[in-house]
Structure formats: C-alpha cells, structure tokens
Amino acid sequence: MKYLLLFTGILFSVLLNAQGSFEIYALKYAVLKAPTPVSNWVNNGPEKDSVSISFHFWLIKSPEGKNILVDAGCRMDLSNAIDFGLTDYERPDSVLLRLGIPADAVSDIIISHPHWDHIDGLPLFPGATVWMQKEDYTYYTGEAWQKPVKPGGIAPRNVEFLLQLNMAGKLKLVDGDNKEIIKGITVFTGSRHTYNSQYVVVQSGVNKVVIASDNIWIYYNLHKMLPPPSYGTMNAAGYIKNMQRMKTQASKPQYILPGHDDAMFKKFPAINERVIRIL
Image (cartoon, rainbow, N blue to C red; front, side, top):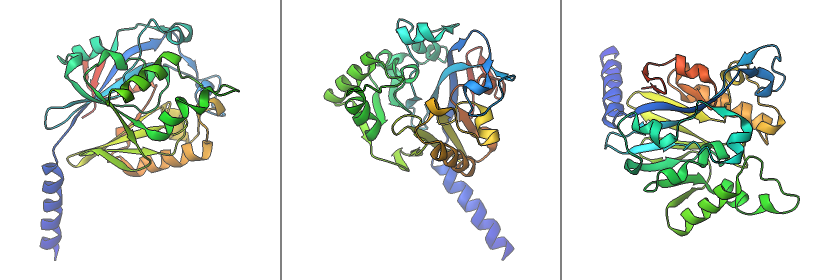
C-alpha cells in the first residue's frame, strides 16, 4: 500500500511539472519618498509603526515563451502620480527592459483593478491583449461617472484607453471568480478593492503563487487579517475572506505577494535594484 501511495505521489508531481514551470518576477517602478503610518493601509493599524511603500507590477514568463504582465504601472506625466508623491521613478517598460524584454514582446497584461497606478502604463505595451474583470470595466466606464461621481482612483484618460482597447478587440473581459484565463493562470474575485477587483494564482509545477496586488495592500493586512481602511475596499468582510482563501491557495506563505509593501523586495533574490525573482 505504501508503495502505491508513493507511486501516486510521484505521478502527481510529474503531472504537475508536465504543466510547465513559470518564471515569476516583481518589478519596482517607483516608491514613496518616506515611510508612511501602517494605519494608512490597515484599518485600526498602528499609527506609530511605519511601512515603506513601493509601486510595482509582475512578470510571468510562460513555458511557451510568453511574457505576461500582472498590472502595468503608470506614466509619470499623470497628475495622480505627481500628487501622490511618487519618487525614484523609472518607466515600467524601461524596468522590464532590465530583463532584456522589450515592450512589444509582452503578449498579455492581466489587470488586477483599474486604479491609475496599475493601468496607466498600458499604452507602453501596444501589442498586449489586456484581461480585466467585466464588472470592473462596466462600472468604471459607466455608472462611476454618473452624479454623484464616484470614480475613486480611476483617471479619465485610463477609462478612455480601456474603451479604445475594447473597440480594437484587444480587451478580454473576465466574467467572475475562479476563471482560468491562460493555462496555469487563474483569476479570483471577492476582495472588492474596486468594484470587482481580481487577483492571480499561478500554478508553476508543484508551486502555486498568489499575486494579490491590492487585494492585500501590505503584509500587515495579511499577518493580522485586517482589511484596509474604508477607502481601500467596498467590502471589508470580503477582503478578509479572500486573504484567508489566499492562504489556502499558495503552496508556501511567502508566495502570497502584496500590492505595495516594499518589504517584498527583501524577501526574494534580487536580479538588480528594481527586479526580484519570485520563482
């Protein structure tokens, strides 16, 4: 019996590896100049403790040679970026080029949510097919702009570009939770950081990596199971529930990757000063 179990385990491992192994990187394009209070990012978080905030996106290299981004960063001529105080900025396509990958080699971009710091960089990657939650797209190209206007962190020029992508046939609208959009890459919803934000789970051989993006702002949210303040989610209970789900999805705790905690760049091997390799 024990030999059968051993054989079954080996076979399962072989089958998982047969799906192919992805390479996963995090790429930093900007930071906030000074640490900010944890309470800015965590509901009831301590004001006396601080966290260093970075702005980053992710690269997934598929076994077939595709270059897939999760989020696209932003351009620095956007008033939101200037007002927010971004510093140490490098344009996202230039950061990607540090890995020898030109912008036109990006095949797909999975948008976790349409805030300016995650989608304003889309025009830098003109050849990419963009994946976005259907409900996020519908809300932020429509109802969010009705009076009283409630677009949150959505920049008008980004909405216009999403419309252009859609008309050009380059936007794929994902309808709901637990959808495998590319073999080995599945998206999940429920945190409601925006109207229906999504996060990404990558099955790479025997490993599963959760790219949470802003469905976990910083590690403190995850470690204490606390949502962000009210401006960070439309459903605090859903935010917590999804963090709990992420813990069951990642093959290791360190493979849950938050959206803005600069500490992530100290947890994985550095390729250069702006890029780390997760897997």
